[in-house]
Amino acid sequence: MILCKVIGNVAAQQKEESLVGKRMLLCQTEETGKLERVVAVDLVGAGVGSEVLVSRQYGGAQGYIDLYIIGIVDMISEG
Image 1 (cartoon, rainbow, N blue to C red):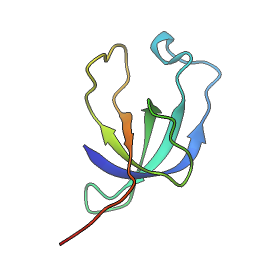
Image 2: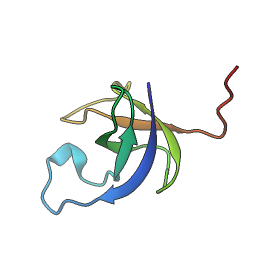
Image 3: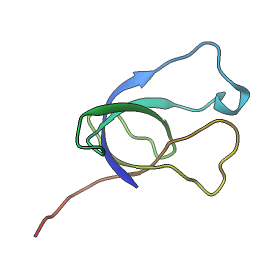
Image 4: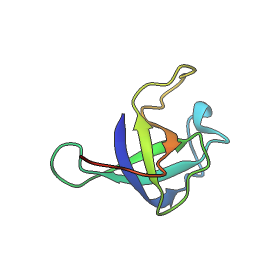
């Protein structure tokens, strides 16, 4: 899983059939040590500003979807 922050929405009039009806969000992560923006399909109703968990795999995965938002983070505690 990857910890990300939702920074925007993504809209596409033309898209592959497996994406029809799915909400896509623009997320920012520091997974590689640098800021990176990725697009993920939202499965949990996240919104702009939410800290989310993004997975590269999902049990019911089909089509061309690489990243899924699978959780909204309530709290992070270090130490």
